[in-house]
Image (tube, rainbow, N blue to C red; front, side, top):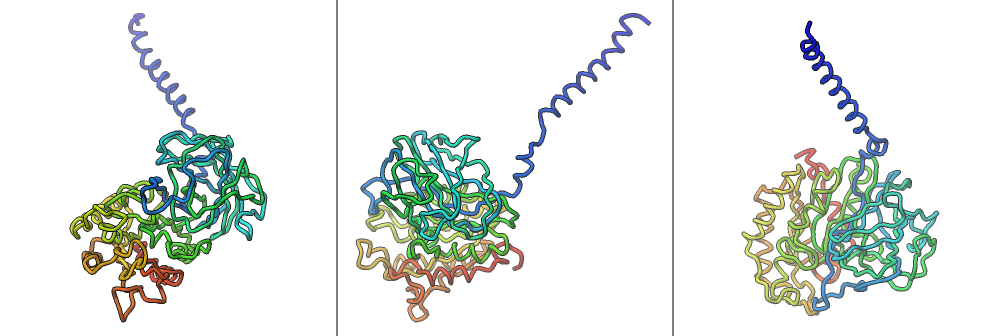
Amino acid sequence: MSIETRRARSRPKTAFAKQLSIFALAASLFVETPALAQDTNWIGTWMASPQPTWGADFAFPTKIPAAVQNQTFRQVIRISLGGPRFRFVFSNIYGDAPMKIGAASVAIAGPNATSAIQAVQSLSFGGKESTVILPGAQAVSDPLDMTVADGTQLVVSTWLPDKTSLKTFHWDGRATAWFGQGDLTRATTFPAKDKTDARILLSEVLVDTTNEGAVVAVGDSITDGNGATIDANTRWPDFLAMRFAPNHIAVLNAGISGGRLLQDKMGVNALARLDCDVLTQPNVRAVILLIGINDIAWPGTAFARQQVRPAAEAMIAGYRQFIALAHARNVRVIGATLTPFEGALSGTPLDDYYNTDKDALRLEINRWIRESGAFDGVIDFDRLLRDPAHPARLAPIFDSGDHLHPGDAGNKAMAGAIDLGVLLGSHP
């Protein structure tokens, strides 16, 4: 056998040996880590949809400072599902500059809400106590071991050491939050300097627990809870969360007061926030969509003096696109009829919020929601809440008093009317 023949026969063995070496290297690079193996049951258990702040020319104040420095915010939240591990999400999605969180902490809330009934636990971000959130981005904490039951109230504290413009918030938090000077994240009791009922920075809480999925309520002020008692957790998604917790279903409130289907202002339009508020949520199974009354009623009022009321066809096209986008991600969409609003906000600068032409459009939209078959199911909140003797108005027992928003009793009735089987498609 010649030398060249021996070389030729040896080459395949050499090539094969090199391939084995490459495969061995690749295998050593792709090793499942314990952290990766354990992170299989994360689900949202609380949220407050981020909104951009607005200027002083709008009808409502933002209820938060334009900028802060060396201040701590302490907020109280009530989670939906409990569990043994949590992560906390902070948002700078509408910010125009990096935002530094100097420290953050969490504890179970005490009886006076600002206090903690156990040791305060510090949050970390990549193993460090501080983090910088880039403009347009979010930051999520490292997993925190903390065994908490369903429906528990937590206090979350966030310290901003540098001068920071506040561009991202949630206007109608329906829960008191406090400001204090300096780093108070580890304080058991909180020496408050000021307070608000808006949400600041904190946008979501995730829990690692066995679950059957999440339901997201997308809507406007009726879902956000305007009209519900502050600090009482009596919004209709709050009641629904407590109903569904024994079934291991999380309920997330993606209501934004002033929210609209087709237009921006107090938050971007529903289609623009569908990805962030719904489709990126882990294991979301269904959406309850209750939105559109502000599209109908805002135009011509002090909210939107120069805007023209949309035609029914434009609103229906918006609903259909919302449904199509959700269905593309295998998420069910349950349509909710728009509730009665005759007399809404009478005696205020917005007493032109209602008129009979606007109500005619509401009835046309409701007829389409009920009869089109476009949704995976329908919840008839209009029929539930209206006054049988005067169907254009909310029934007095359900009215918060402004003739637009249900009160606590109305919210409880709304949650009680939602069938879990229809919502998740387990029966017709």
